Length: 282
Image 1 (cartoon, rainbow, N blue to C red):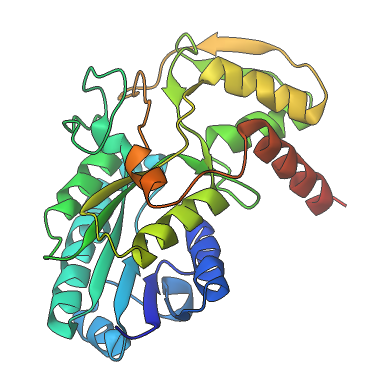
Image 2 (image 1 turned 60 degrees about the vertical axis):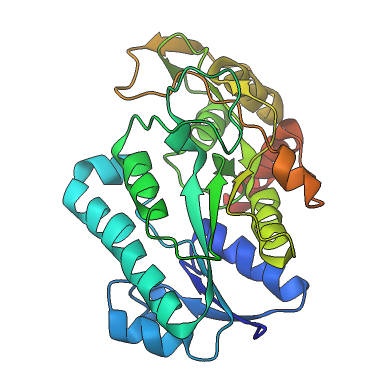
């Protein structure tokens, strides 16, 4: 297989970390992102970009939940039709495809912990479109169900970013619902290593969870944000967000069996994010 890898969404938050990890382990990255003129909806452009590539890591998506709900037609077009076109181009080029889906596809399925065999029950448009994209995967492809990831440079709408920035400003942190909702927050660099671990593995699994095993509640996340900043702020419970996943606890046993383990604890990762935010304000 060619050592050249096409990465869609290469200039995004996750894409930058994935490209850096691919470079680190010896692959040649071919970037493909709207910011550099790469459009996954352009089938001819995709075919040209895949020439000579052995694989494609498909990360490009409408990933912000608020953007997805504000423009559902665009979300469906990019996340579903765009993925269909990427899959078709990879099939034609003979390039292996790895698709960044989301652990949010498990939604509120009632299970205490979800491995890759857990039934999907998506609650939000974003997760529904990512699940729909999974259906287009050709033989030999891999579906990567990614945790909620965070790190320096993350989207400002993420809870980790909101909580840290409000704690830094001495402002009240709003908690949707009772704050007992859980997520397996995972540092973006650990997610990137997980993706490349699956890509490089001879095992060729069909579907892999890429997530820390630690399920953190929203209330605990708010407390960790305060500890990372070194300041206490008021926590205020507000109305729950529609479509909220109640509990998300992800089993990463399969990924760990391929040799991966997270390097960042949530507390360490939050402190690194605070350092980056403070540096940016200088």
